[in-house]
Amino acid sequence: MTSEPTYHMIIDGKKLSAPTGFEVTNPATGAVIGYAPNGQSKDLDAAVDSAARAFKTWSLITDEARCAAIRAVSAKLEEHAEELAQLMTAEQGKPLNGIGSRFEVGLLKDWAEHTASTKLPVKVIQDDETGKVELHRKPLGVIGSITPWNFPLAIAIWHVLPAIRTGNTVVLKPSPHTPLATLRMVELMNEVLPAGVINCVTCDDKSSNLGAEMSVHRGIRKIILTGSNRTGAKVMSSAADTMKRLTLELGGNDAAIVLPDVDAKAIAEGLFFGAFFNNGQACAAIKRLYVHEDVYDEVCDALAEFAGNIKTGPGTDEDSILGPLANQMQFDIVSRLVEEGAKEGRVLTGGAPGEGLFYPVTLIADLNDDNPLVQSEQFGPVLPIIKYSDIDAAIEMANRNENGLGGSIWSSDVEKARQLALRLETGTGWVNQHGMLRPDVPFGGRKKSGLGVEFGEEGLASYTDIQAVVS
Ligand code: NAD
Image (cartoon, rainbow, N blue to C red; front, side, top):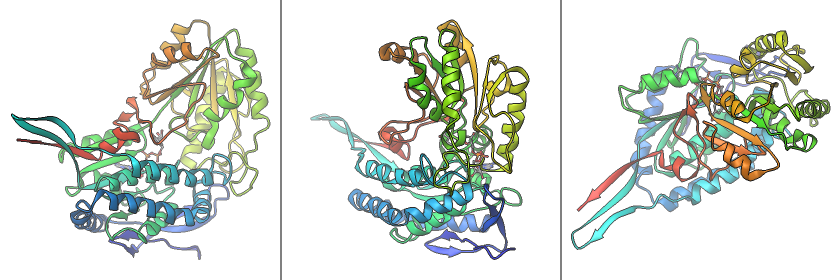
C-alpha cells in the first residue's frame, strides 16, 4: 500500500473501515489516489439495520422538516463543492471545467431546490355524503441505491434526495471505479442529517459484490440502479423474490437524425457536445448520427472542424475540455469498437488510442447501420456517422436498436422535428439539443434502457406506494 488516504464507509452516522481496502487510481496518470473499504455482507446488514432504525423516525417527521434537511444538505455540499469536484476529477478523470466536475457538483443546487419544492398531495377521489376516498403516498422504507462511474456524484444525488424527501432512508453503493467522492459526500451529508438516514457501503465487485446482495436483501424495499443493461437484468430477476420496487436507469444507444434543412455550421457545436460531453461516457449521449445526403458532407466537415479545436488532456488542466477514459475496461471496449468501425468507414479524425487511457475524439463516416460501432453502446469519445436519403428509413434505423433512452431530431423546422421526435421509441425525444436533463422533466428509458423514471413529480412518486383510505 502507498501512503494515499484510506476512506471509510458511513454507517449509522459513523465512519467504518473494513479489514481490507482496494485501490482507486487516477485515470489520467495511473497513480493510486486512495483506498476504499472492501465492505462485506455484515457491513451491508449493519447499514440496512441502521437505515431501518432511522426510517422509524424519519418517515414520521413533517414534510417541512425533510425539505429543510434537503436544503441543509445542499448548503453543506456547496461549502465543499471544490473539494468534491477535485476528488471526482482525480478518480473519474473528467475535467474540472466545462461540463465537468464543477458543473456536476453545481447541479446539486437545482436538484435539491426542485426536490424540496415538489409536492405529492393527497388525492381526493370522492368526498360526498356517501363517503370519502383519499390516495396517500407512503414511503417504502430502506432504499438501495446503486450508482455507476460516469457521473458518480450527480447520480447519487439524483437517487438520494427524492428518496429522503419522501420519508425513506438509504443505503448507497457507488461503483468500485469511483467510490471516493461518494464516500466523502455521504460523510458530509451525515453532518446535517440524523444518523442512519443515508449510509454508504463500498466493495471491489470481485471478492465482494454488495450490489448483488442488496438486490436480494430482505431489509431493502426498493432498488434504484443506474448502470448497464446487464446489471439491470440481474437486479430485476434478483429482486423478484422480495417484490422490491425498481427504478432501472440503464444503457442507451441514442440516435440523432439530421434533416436536410439544417445549417451544418450552426448545429455543429450542439451535435458535438451532444455526443462528446463527459467524453461520450454518458447514457444519453448521441452514439449514432444519421445525416441526410443533402447536407452529409457539410455536417461531416463542420463536425471535424469543430473537433479540431477540442483539447483532450488531464482533467486538472484548466483548459482541458475532455479527459481520459475513466477506466481500462471502457478503454478496451472503445478501442475494439473503433477498430470495427475503421475497417468499414472513413475516419475523419482520431481513430487510434492515445497514451495511457487517453483516446482522441474520433469521427467515423460512411458506416453501414449494421456495424458494431453503430449497434453497440460504445460509451466513449467516438461518433459513427451514417448517410440516409429517406426519413422513414432513418427513423426505422433509429428505432431498431434494443435501447430506447433518448433520441434527437435536428432541423430548422421545429414543429416538424417535434412530430418526428414523437416517432422515436425513446424516453426522451429532443429537438435541436441532446442530453440536457432537467429536474422537472421525468427521465427514463424505454425498451431495454430501463424501467421507471427519475425527476419531476413522477420520479418523486416512484419512492412511494399508494395507500387508498376508503370510508
Ligand atoms: P455497471 O452495470 O457495470 O455497474 C453499475 C453499478 O452496479 C456499480 O455500482 C456496480 O458495482 C453495481 N453492480 C455490479 N454488479 C452488480 C450486480 N450483480 N447486482 C447489482 N449491482 C451490481 O455499469 P457501469 O459500467 O458502472 O456504468 C455504465 C453503464 O451505466 C452504461 O451502460 C450507461 O449507459 C449506464 N448509465 C445509465 C444512465 C441512465 O440514466 N439511464 C446514467 C448513467 C449511466
